[in-house]
Length: 178
Ligand code: 5GP
Ligand code: MG
Image (tube, rainbow, N blue to C red; front, top):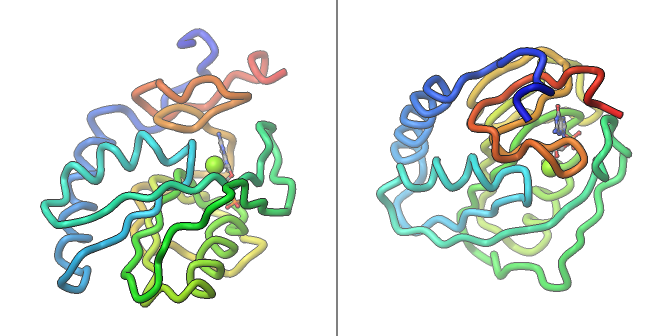
């Protein structure tokens, strides 16, 4: 796997340190009471697992499968909800977690759906946000790192299903993207 990485963008220690401060900020800013965390699979899995263990608060975890990239390098422009059941969110304070904010379509589509389903408030957190003009005007409430607009893998993010278990975020070699 390592041989396919052009360069490391955010190394493991830096990610872990940033998660400490993100968790602290979430803990301080979230209104009192339980949180329902919604993890967007599969990309946000690693980020969420490390982040949530730093939040000393009653919370429950739900997962959603949505697809926008379909395993390639470019966004397809459409967000599909793949689960048969949608979690019960009526009146709940939601922390919606995704791996990366790119065009913004995923976060907008999921946040809209959560609001339609009656969520009291939807707060969003992403490990990474690409510094670019988005298709949807959206920003996340909690952002781990702003990065340049390039395709990254690792720490949950994949290319064709691979590299999710790298402990850092890196840029894929062009020769590996085929
Ligand atoms: P958006 O809907 O904001 O365009 O895209 C969000 C989704 O696209 C993310 O959940 C992620 O799955 C995928 N994505 C966007 N940029 C990248 C990237 O640089 N690398 C990987 N592996 N996935 C990305
Ligand atoms: Mg994803």
